[in-house]
Image (cartoon, rainbow, N blue to C red; front, top):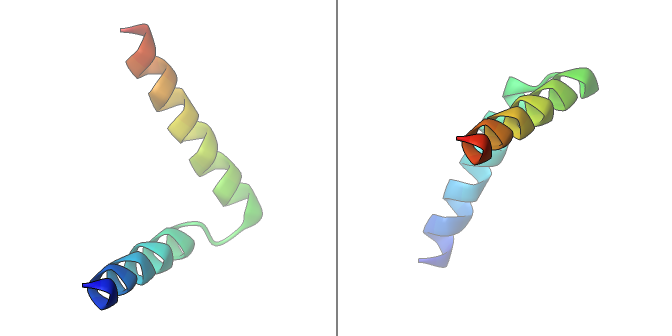
Length: 43
């Protein structure tokens, strides 16, 4: 079970890192996530 969770975590980490190739890309992704949370709260 622990191995499955570790593999899943590694896959998610690789996917997230490959989506953001630069520091500015990471900042944009975090900003978009914050905006989505704000929209959900304001509904």
